[in-house]
Image 1 (tube, each protein chain N blue to C red):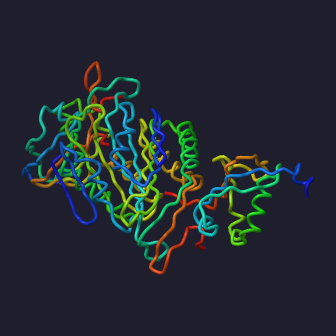
Image 2 (image 1 turned 180 degrees about the vertical axis):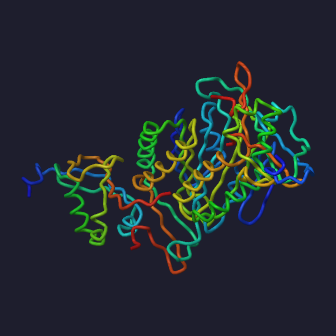
Length: 92
Length: 92
Length: 145
Length: 145
């Protein structure tokens, strides 16, 4: 696990933002969240799904946003990143 | 000519309306115009082209309107009809 | 001036146009989630030539009746609600409105497609003619090659 | 509230929308003969169910930045001038405006096509979410089958 995550044992703090159904399920609009250094978006989403199993239902439709841009979930996260799980949008 | 026009020798009075370039060429916006009874739109257009040769240039693009509807030029005209030669329109 | 106003449409041909907001309000209805509003504005150029003014001549009685049939066609072809077509006659200086078309529908695609189809047909069928004033004189649209 | 206003576009995400006429005026320019303005309005039905209210949640900072890129794409893909996209957040009762999109161009087809493409992309890409209030409760759009 440590190798897989490229982790040095240190932690990074992410600034999670929650919206729409996920904000309701999580019960908040934002939070600081610690993850092992070197982890990627996929690992974060796995971890959040573990904590909040209701997310599973939406998982296949979720896009990842890091610092207000859509990114591939394989992207490595960094300390201070603003991260959001974007369920299917419905503006207009 | 009499046979061709189905004419009885009587005349009908048409209410001609002129618009756009044709109003400028004709020098007026409307007039009463006499034609033999039984004549059709084609005959009227021929006659107007004789009177106002500048119309010739537009003839192949002219549509005929009788009583405020586009009609085929073969339609027989009647006394009191409101008739207009519609050059290509350009509203909008 | 010629106006036809009923439950389904508002047709106005006049030398004074109302604000586009009035057409917007007219077509708005609680079952229509999409309102598309198109405005024609006199632009300052045409085929590379500078334009200073447009003038619209109109066979008003026929234009209103052609528009009424045309709108009825559109309301059959597309699932749209109310439709407004307002066209100016006379002079329209650069930057001013010559036409307002508003279409409401339950859905955006239909509102937008119906607007385009309505304008395309208006430009082919409704007896309105445009005269453009260029720096070197004025010409009816039909006079131009 | 988030606003980006410059020579090329006006983006506004806010719990208060201006009148559509302001978007119309913003995009109008003397070289653009066509202004197309689309408004989204809360309608009273959705898939056969009665709707009484919409609520929009928005990731405002990201939405504004996604919209800015999206509008820049549209201005490359289509020969259009200025573009305005105004989106409401929070509650939008039936009959009220949730969104205004305005696009100006020299020609009608481009103004109208660019509007449709812009809305289609907005609905796929911009992080805004709709919650519908029905007679039997409220649901985020993603919750619905």
